[in-house]
Structures are given as C-alpha cells and as structure tokens.
Image (cartoon, rainbow, N blue to C red; front, side, top):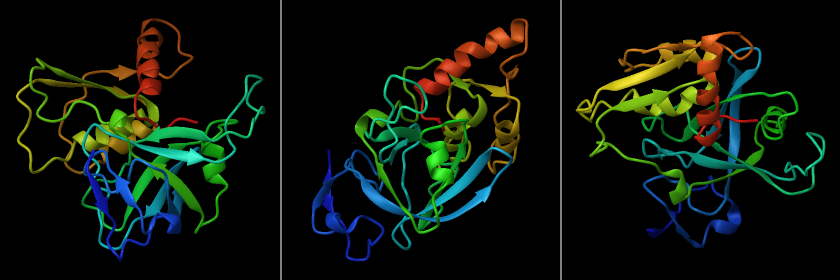
Length: 237
C-alpha cells in the first residue's frame, strides 16, 4: 500500500494523525486507519433519508475510485445478540458510497436512509453540525475497476439506497463507454427517482423491482437484490 505524509494544510483529519505517516489503499484521501472528519451540513432528502456533508481539507477531492466505498465508525453503537437495544459498547462500522463525485472539492456527501432502531443511521441523524465522524478506506473496499477486462457484460443491481454505488458509474466523462453491454436493474422509490436526476447518467434501466411486501413474482425478484445490497457498499442502518 502507498504511504505518504499529509500536507500542512490538510486540517480535516484528527489532530493526533497530523505528524504520522499514513497508509492509503488507493487514490482516496482517507487512509486505512480511522480519521475524524467534521459534519458540516445536512439536509433532508425525504421523510426517511438525509444527505450528510463531511468536510475535507480545502481544495481537496475525496478521490475515491469507482467501485469502492469508505467505512464509517459510530462509537459505542455496536450490538450484542439480544436485539436492537442491546448495545454492547463496541463500535458499529458501516460501508457507504458517496452520492457526490470526485469533482466536489473540500467535502463529500452521503445519502443515508434511517431505519427504525438503526444503530448508525439514527446516531448520525442525531449529530449536531461540527461533530466529528470517523472514516477509513481499506483495500478490501475496492472492487473490480474500469475497464473491467475479461467481463462479457456488466449488470448493476440497484435497490433503495443501494443505488449510491451506481452513482459512481454514471458520470465518467474522461472514460470511453465500456465495450461490454451494461444492464442496470432499477428499483422504485425515492432513491430511484434521485438516480434519474444524476447528471451524466445515460444507462437504460433494464427492469424494476417492487418494494418488499408485494406478493407474486416481482416481490420474489427483489429478494436477491436486497441480499446483494447488504453485501455491497450501501447505506445500511
């Protein structure tokens, strides 16, 4: 993994990290060890989803590779085996993919859905502006990279806030279109409507998955997508 020292102006990291040489898994500005970044803004997207803006050093991009995510730490929000109220004092860690791209400087944005009893989503929602949140980025969180050599086709499974990783794929103006056919499988709901507003998006949506609770074939089709969402880099509770 590459190592580099932080520039003097990079003030968004935790003070104790200022003089350390940090490891980096990729071009991402966030190292492989947790650093604290300030919550500088938040706005409601809809009744159960919030867009959170976190500060980076002035003029710096997150520089996160496509098909990658970052890890967020919620101190003391880890759970024991006895249900959603059984907080055991450990830290809860979740993978998230930004809904902002690398052209945004000095900050990045996460769109996170709140779940009833969500260990991290509810904790984030209660934070005041200026609060510090821990992030890191590790090599495990980097998946197959463009141009996806050896792949005959590309399927994008998008459900709910699991659309966030697909946001990365849409606006890649400096890259020619992939040679392989691309088949996005979309979902209904606010997150799907958000994706339709994404600048630069041009992929044709190949199908629609019904919300959980609908009966019949379409509901069954949604099950593997929800499983994939939890395995991927999505906004979880």
